[in-house]
Amino acid sequence: MLGFPLPYQDELVYSIIARAKVRLALESPKQLLDLIFNNRKVIATVDLPCHLSVISDLYLGQQLSVLDLIYQHTLFPIYAPFMPENRRQKCIQLMSSESQGAVHLATGMNASRIPIVSSIRYCPACIKDQLDLYKEAYWRREWQVGGTCCASHGALRNTEIGFRSNHRHEFVAVNDIQLESSESRSLKYQCEVIVTHKVRELLDLGEKISPSFAQWTQFYQSLAARNNCLRGNCHIDHEKIIERIHQKWSSKFLLNYGLSDLESDTSWLKAIFRKHRKSFSYLEHIVVLEAFNDSNWKFSDVFQVISVMPLEMEKQASNNTSTDDIDNSTLENRQQWQGLLDQYSVKSSRLLNGALYAWLYRHDKDWLLEINKKYHVPKVQGNRGIDWIKRDLA
Image (tube, rainbow, N blue to C red; front, top):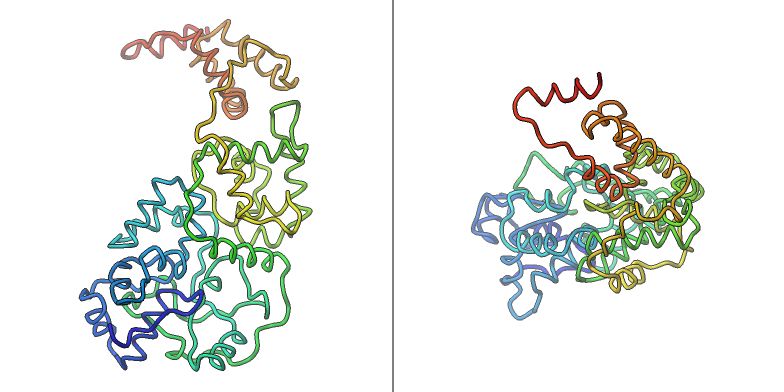
């Protein structure tokens, strides 16, 4: 398409389309959607846009593929490495065509504890540099990621353009609004600077096959073992891990980004060192990895280590055959649970001591399931099941 702008480095697809509107002197959002997409229902999405095959086709002879757009001009790279490979491929398909919001669900963004950036952000000093260099300005990707700042100039400023704007079909260019002309605040927040550099790494990594949940599980368990964060030979010492987090990250930063719950049994920090059953956010990974490595660690090195780990975890040998490597608290809880099973059924034992069952399920699941099989009581039909429990407890 003649007149459609080539993207600047690290520019959002949203920004490219908004600049096209300015260059083509279009006033109506509907005119822009008709001209580019031939579809007035397209939503102006800042972070994870769709219909990218249409945008790619506009660059006749420029060889700018859908994958180039996804990995160089959207925020998808901060989610892609942390989701299973089949889901990553599905997201690419959705962004290529039409998703109707499914891509935001698939990345886990909608369910994440990390607060979503509410409006488009910018750095006044960087905008000035862009105008001096290119005679026009654009929205950069890293400005729109939660936890970041401008590593050169300080805190970012918010515009009135919402990520989920009421004007759902309108692409707003930098030139369309009045921005603060003052320099960004020189004050830099060390935690945000760290996150900014790591987010840049993720944005620049390019397409890679995503590790499996099993590989992430093995990686974090080996990370704990290498850093002497184990109790006995196999159980994670969460207190030592929490101490490392507090040494590296301020309490204010963790609170601002929904990561302050470190000690509860359901905390994100404990979950990331257990068996992975869901994806964790870029920010959760950064917080842990920064606490366990020197300042020169790279995401590329992390993914290289994970890539050589088996895709599936080997099934651990049954823990009830040997107690040589079991710590005292686990052994005591096993004995207590087996004592209950000697007197009552599995279901009745859970009613009597639900806390013990929950602890074993989280920390010693393989042994728990194996021992419960030996004491399994056949299912009783109807209300007789209640009679079983009452008889057991009598």
